[in-house]
Structure formats: C-alpha cells, structure tokens
Image (tube, rainbow over all chains, first blue to last red; front, side, top):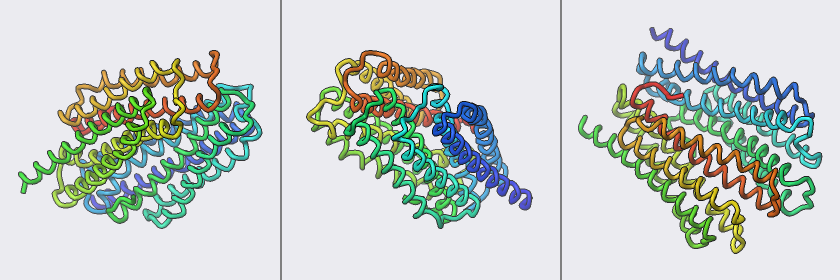
Length: 214
Length: 214
C-alpha cells in the first residue's frame, strides 16, 4: 500500500514536470510564430493546448484521490495539496502561450510586431522559457535552491514589461493604436507566464519546508 | 479540542469573508477615483491594500497550522486546503483595485479615461463588485448555489473586456496611444478581478462537494 502510494506520488510529480516541459515548448513555438509570422506553427500551438488542459485535469483528480484514500502527512501532504495548484499555474502558462499564437493567427498575414519591438520580445521569451525550466527543475528535485535566481529573472521580465509603456507612450510610435494594444497584451503574456513559473517554485519551497516563500 | 477546532475553522471563514468585503470596497473606491479623478480616494485605496495583504498572510498561517495540528478530514480538510488559495485570489483582487487607483494617481491631474469610455467602465465595475459579493456569499454559506449566475456575470465582464478592443481599433479613436493602453490595462483589471471572484466560488463548490467545478 505504501509502495503504491510512493509510486503514485512519483507519477504525480512526473506529470507536473511533463506539463512544465509542454508549457515551455508551447511558449517557445508561439514565440517562433510571433517573430517569423508563422501561421502553421501558431495553429499547432493552439491545437496542442488541450494536451496541457487534460494533463491538468488528470493531475487534479489524482491529487484529490490520493488525499481521500491515503491521508498523507507532513511533506507528502504538502506535495499533494500543492500539486493541483501547480497544475493550475501550468495550465495558465499553456493558455498564455496559446494566446500569443492566437494573436499571430488573428492578424495574419499582417505581422503583429513592428521590427523595432522584436528583439525585446525575443529577450522576454528567453527569460520566460528559462523560468518554466526553473519551475520544472524545482518540481523534479522537490527543492527550492533556485528561488533567488528565478525571482531575479522574474524581476527582469517585469522590468521589460514595464519599460514597454515608455516605448509606446513617449517615443515616436508610428504603428497605430492597434499595434500598441497588441504589444501590451503580448508583453503581459510573457510577464504573467513568468509570474506563474515563479509561483510554482515558491510552492516547491512550501512543499520542502512547510513555509510559503513570500 | 474539537470545539476549539470548530471555532478556528469559523474564524478562518470569517476572515475570508472579511477579505472579500475589503476587496469589493477597494474596487468600488478605486472606481470612484477613476470616474471622478479623485486623487485622495485613490491614495487611500493604495494605502489600505496592505490590510488585505496582511489578512492573506494570517489566513495562510492559520490554515497551515490547522492542517498540521488537527489533521482534518473530508469537508473540513477541503476547507482548510482551499482557504489559502481563496486568500491568494482575494489578495490579487485587492492588488487589482490598487492598480486602478495607482493609474489615477500616476496620470493626475490628467483624467485617465476619455468620457466616451466612462459608462463602460462604470458597468464593468458594477459587475466586478457584484462578483466579489457573490464570492463572499459562497464563502459565508459554504455553498455553491450561486455558481451559474456568477459565471454568467463573469462572462458578461469578459465580453465587455473583449469588445473594448473593437472600440479602440475600429472606431474613430482620437485620444492617442497612451490613453488606449491605459484603457486596456484598466479593463483587464476588472476582467481579472471577476475571474478571481469566480475561482473562489468554484472553490466553494469543491469544498462542499469534493468535485472541482469546471
């Protein structure tokens, strides 16, 4: 019974790690679609989002079943409690990648981003995807060793998001209101993707120590 | 011991209901500041946000302590598990109200919203605040009877948010890029405020039934 419990806990963690990898890959592909105006890639990201959605639903059921049938304690209890919430964060990360891809599809064949913004978005995407890998690592190792580098990266992402407003408002922005609104919403996707990844790492700290990182 | 446990559960619920009331009041006041360009009201909303932040932190500690010391089961267990996540949603709702107020302060003495958008935002605020009251009610009664009217209201809020983009992009928008970007970000505050309220109601369904509403 205990062995089977241990296996099911391991499966739960493996499923979360897999969801992190899927979310990171979805954001990488959505960014490729954004920067190359790739409609085919965008459509694949949109179609594949249901895989993460189903994984989240399975993970939630598994965690509630473990809770009901096994009455776990201490660190195991914290892991089972944290799992559905990390799965929810990962599903939202997938949704944010999907949102980037949908914007590419909606505007096609027009390009969404003016050339002047592409390096900024490429950089934001690199950080966001690194954060998703950090979340996967924190889940895999069940440890919080990455928290400070992860929160620095998240802070950099927030700074990049905030500084976009200065670009749109104070410089010679000649691409119109629609392009500015698209840029803000896309930038927010990367920012929120990073925030969700950070929340997963914080939750890993809670699982390890019983104290929620502030 | 059981009596004391029961009291502490009741206190936990009362604290969440109180946070819902604070979040609703913060959004109401932030909206007043937005629609009347009221700097004083905006500053009070910004200063008061720490009350919700502290309440969230206390609620999280209380729930973890109940979990560690009392090993609750069934519905009580679900309540103790759900509480910190509802507190997190409520803290974010407070942050969104604060963000509306900060925008008023940042643009002062200029008005943030052009007159043409004010009725739209007033309507969005009414729905968002109703949703917060619905969340308070679901927490107070520990029941999910409100789910369908709450999710209809949330859907209306999402529709209002989406239709803003048509106003900004396709009509004769003469207020500049900065005002359009502000409007989108503010509209998103109300939309996300409603989404968080809905997630609290869904969580109340889970506490009552053991099944997460989809």
